[in-house]
Length: 403
Image 1 (cartoon, helix red, strand yellow):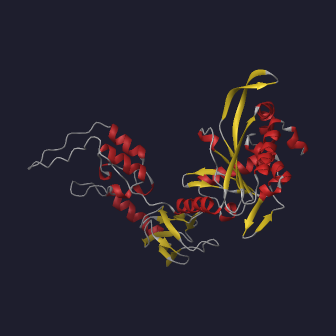
Image 2: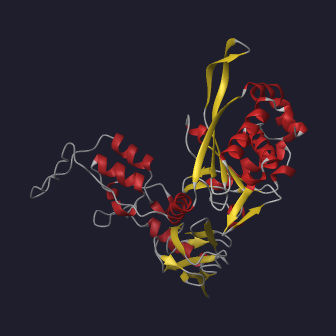
Image 3: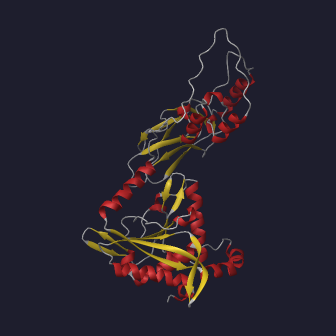
């Protein structure tokens, strides 16, 4: 029995999706619940699993196409796997002949941007190389391995073939790649923040000696007790919450002519993924322990890499924290995440000479940046809020005692 593979119901506020990747090709055997195809929306990637065992008999919508809920993506023949397996074995048993070469990995245009770039640089064609990726697609490693092999001389032909045109030194190559749905949405949000808010940033620096010593002293015991490493982010989230409690407007948002003061603390933690920056929300962060915060952050990172974050994970938030320091940033101006009115930027930790009690000492220092919407947040509140974060980090006991 043929089963239609349909686009599932899309999350609220999402009207369409883009077909990203088919994980199987027509004729492949399928297991129930196996992911057949990824659909990319402007926030998350959705998986479309098989509803029964069988064979994928037809792919109707190719990657890059826009689809809506209920559209038919392909056909699955239920219970056909048993018949497909012997046919596949018989095909594999056929001896290869000069007149029937193995199927190539597709043209250069069918490969990923990184592979296409490398093929172009090396002057190679995808049809020359056997792919080990999904569906026989090439990986960067496949291309490098092929290029590293000594190439056998081409067989002589009855008539000399025209030599390929040599690559011109210093050629100004270009490559046009369409934005993903998520990247388009990120661009829209950034422009929205730039055009619709009066964004301003205040800076400070924090001495992380006390936090570093506390982590070093208790990291082994903490990991043994809670099964997770003690990082810096839990300290920063706790310190930010103390600042938001003292200066509630930093946790507020603008709605038309009104200011909405939130009586809860849903903290967005920016996470980098292959598809772009996403900001999952740690809800009621003030009610979580340090260990719970660290576990949640680790879970966000793992699910972001695996494209497993849901719309619920990414919706809402009253304040955000982003850490450019993990990539080596010394200082930057974080952009607001509307409708939030403030965002904290962390940066790299650098040992620098500082004057403490009249003496020059070496301390682990970090620059902090707080961007805020000047329409509702005055400079005084922003500066004092950032100073509160600094003081809590330089004396972590204040976090525990809510001082």
